[in-house]
Length: 203
Image (cartoon, rainbow, N blue to C red):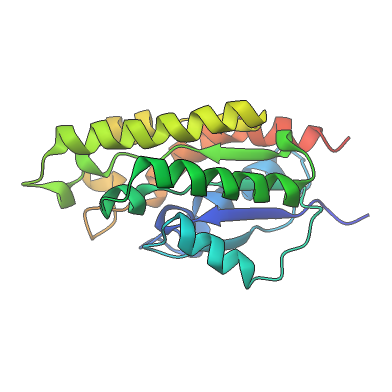
């Protein structure tokens, strides 16, 4: 019997902008699961830097996705916030994505939603209103958390990790915005327990 499949949906944070493939958190997560003797295939990542909710949805339309994934992760929304898109629109489009993720997993408890990190703490945000960015990120995360809980899917908060990491040189890549493999390792540590639990749902 083949190992369960792993589908990772998102944007720059899921594709790992600026880090080698092995540094991406979905790849690190699969490696950690393997190390714990939990079978899962290498992740199929549908994510591109800059994507908003509707752009991810359009990419999924063209990706010929089929149900039956053992694990599905979803991390989306930072570009909605960055572009000044409305929270009402985000709720509607996020909910559609969440419903699609659940359909692809076949079970809500095999879907993990990962919170949006706070890019306002990074060097890239120098000169911007960091407090406003934090408030908006919190609002978008509140929407995602609300809908995730309502759907009985799993939620992991990495926003606190991103804020603690701040602008530390080893926690960001050269662009001063995106997390380094070292920061993604901290995210992976937070996501791992939920991933293990999600894959246990298959048994």
